[in-house]
Image (cartoon, rainbow, N blue to C red; front, top):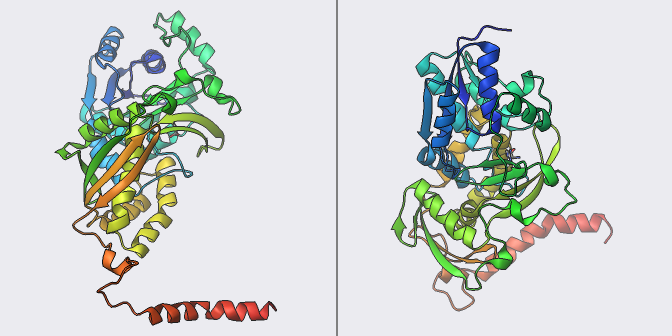
Length: 403
Ligand code: ARG
């Protein structure tokens, strides 16, 4: 085994990373620095400090990354209307590059030669962390205990915890918890009964949204302001990116917006089933499409939609810090120069529907489109010629086919 001098561990204070901390200290016999990111997961972070202290960690880093997460990762991604496989808003995928970036920063600062993470060997997250480290500082080694130790299951993990007197958390019902990943954009839940896609997800899986059936009978009308493609206000009140997303999560959650039960294709090869709750993100996707609908040129908008699946897939696959992501981002960002204005939506029993939109840069012309008399010169004979020429090849084709 290679000799390691110092390790920075991505540490949540939860069961897995508590065990990993112990295992790293025992296996490498070197100093471990812990890094805990506040990404708005809605969990107290002080217990993580206490636990790290108890395990003898001298250098404990707890950093509030909420604003950076939303402004530099979530919002740029939303400018693209990114959805993986048509549905997934990429809530876990987009958090990994930021965590990796901070791990690398801290490793350089404290002179560590390795970073460690608690992602398992079957998931996407290990790929995302490690591709990011490759792109940011190839000299830093990566330790992935889940691929190295001989713990092979959650059962064995619990045994190891017991042997080392590491407290095992249980959910509200006293059962082993699901595998949960939460941040300001979403909560993702996987494992246990959800591993059978034929089984309906039980209601207690959901953490931050009510069942649309139980949502208020009265709809709620909200207005979101956009500037150059990014949301900047809710109901006329300017907000920082993290505050805005937090506000929309509250509103969406109350109306049951943003639930998703999905079977997706992991980059590593298998299919997996997960439950996602993305209340604020779901509202923002509708709203952003709403403001784009009046401010983007048709061909520009369609080009954006063509590259979107590609852009979403490369974020899903862990290539945030890659030249192709930066190239596509430049294109997307360029398209947003006039994507400013206001969108009004109605939140009602699980839906977030755009009901009006307005922009000082609108390309929409009522005078041009009107069914009534119009002042703009639009020669109806042009439409006739337009159809005749577009139909030319279809007429040849039909004649050849003998129709
Ligand atoms: N399948 C999702 C993704 O790859 C979420 C992964 C993390 N979620 C979890 N519950 N462990 O982006």
